[in-house]
Image 1 (cartoon, rainbow, N blue to C red):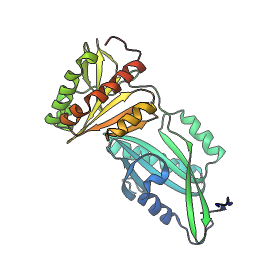
Image 2 (image 1 turned 120 degrees about the horizontal axis):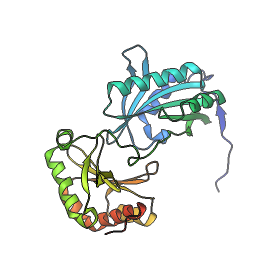
Image 3 (image 1 turned 120 degrees about the vertical axis):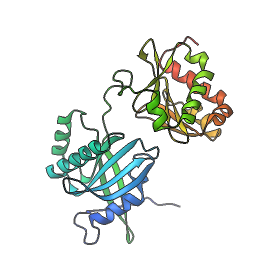
Length: 290
């Protein structure tokens, strides 16, 4: 019979053996522990042009978003906040092709810290994680709790990204993958009639009479593409997608399913199910003329 036990919480800052470098190494080798989704470690102790070193740089698996992560043993302090934001700003300016998010990891997220962050009013995408340490036998277990999540201001439809053109996407992706986008768009003409592809900096969306209506959108890559459906999470639909063994993720923050397609053949194989996704997205947008 299993017994319930009380864990012994310890202070990392005051521990004689656990130093920040060891915490960095653990997070870098176990990015899933942060609870920020599937991340790929990029670099530790990343040297900054103006001086200083960013603790950890990570990116999403599709390489669209980068996370600038700073670690603070003990409680947050003003210098830690400023340093985190400076590194985020530097990386954002050096690599504007990515979406960037600052992440602060600390043992204690103080009330003063919360007040300072509230002053930014969402202008800086920032996540605060509180790390707790527990003694388990001779080992130490770390638990990360998201105290502050990044604030998403507006939507694609309210504030469009920078508009680009077809050539931009053929260079960023390939003509072959863009051809797949065209074929899928044409195959879905029962749903997309009257719409046109709209080329934005970070995705290819839809527009009707010049107005964005991104119930579906595309993120073309070099050898595959993501097809995105805006809708609430649906357990039945999620199960069908999983049973079909599609590479799919539901992104709750954006209220969308993201399906990875290797090419047109994979789309055709799952066409009926993808049409179900399109219909769910159109219902979410209250679009009924199909």
